[in-house]
Structure formats: C-alpha cells, structure tokens
Length: 76
Image (cartoon, rainbow, N blue to C red; front, side, top):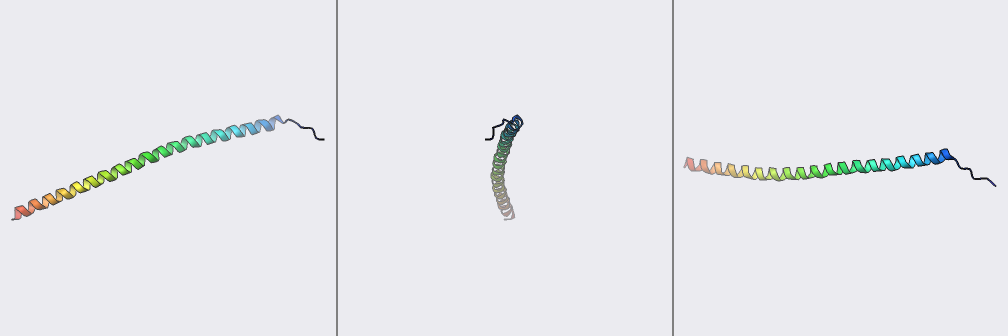
C-alpha cells in the first residue's frame, strides 16, 4: 500500500496559481466595468449629438424658408 506524501511545493504552487487566477479575474472585471462605462457614456454622447444635429438642421431649414419668403416678397 502506498503511503500518502504531503508535497508542500505542490500545495504552494496550486495556491499561488489559484490566487493569481482570482486576481486576474478581478482585474478583468474591473477593466470590463471601465470599458462598459465608457461605452455607455459614448452612446449617450452620440444620441445627444444626433438630437442636437436634428434640431439644428430643422432650424436651418426654417431659416432658409424664411429667407426665401423674404426674398420672394422683396422681389414682388
């Protein structure tokens, strides 16, 4: 019958690998949360810019129509 031998170096290696793996997972989670927040911020910024562009485009169209009406009245 084989006798069970306790290998301290193997146990330390397993513990170190386990701790490093947990640390790496936590680091990745932190990086993911930063990137996700950047994504949310940029999405909001894009939507804000789209709305702002649409409003300014409509305002420009309205100003051009008013200018055209004023020029038509001046020509008459």
